Length: 78
Image 1 (cartoon, rainbow, N blue to C red):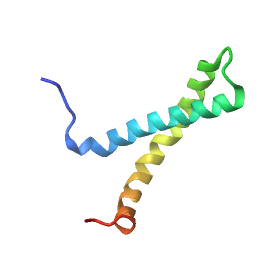
Image 2: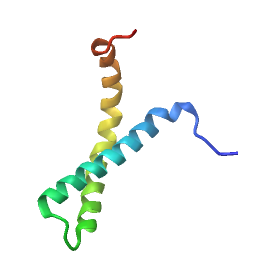
Image 3: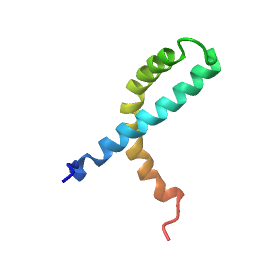
């Protein structure tokens, strides 16, 4: 049997995974644009990713519920 977290952790896990992936992608794009792909690229990328993720995770925890509350005003519920 596979252990799964209770549903009460859904928002936290969603925020964790989304912030990890998005900050990883965005920091990678920023590093490529700034430095190009050269020696030490991965070290710069991982350093940039970690510092951006530290900001992104709490930001997503705060912003995601606000966005969900805004959706009914933007998207029609058919």
